[in-house]
Image: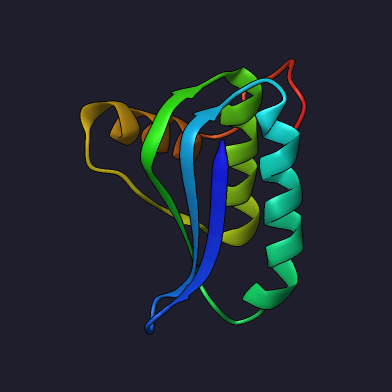
Length: 98
């Protein structure tokens, strides 16, 4: 998994995620998000899912929490990444961390 965080012109902070949000990658994404949280303050967060190929249940819950806690919006363009975004916007599933 690759996570990139950068400032976007007038759009706030962009958290770009590539490949899989699953297994051992989920804690890595959690750390990246927590490290960027202080810089958000009054800025919006855009989570770029366009390079994501798979999300497991724990990854789904982390995306849902990022959406709920930071008011994050998702950038998705394929049916698969749009599905990941819609699922995260619907909330946390029970029985899994994050």
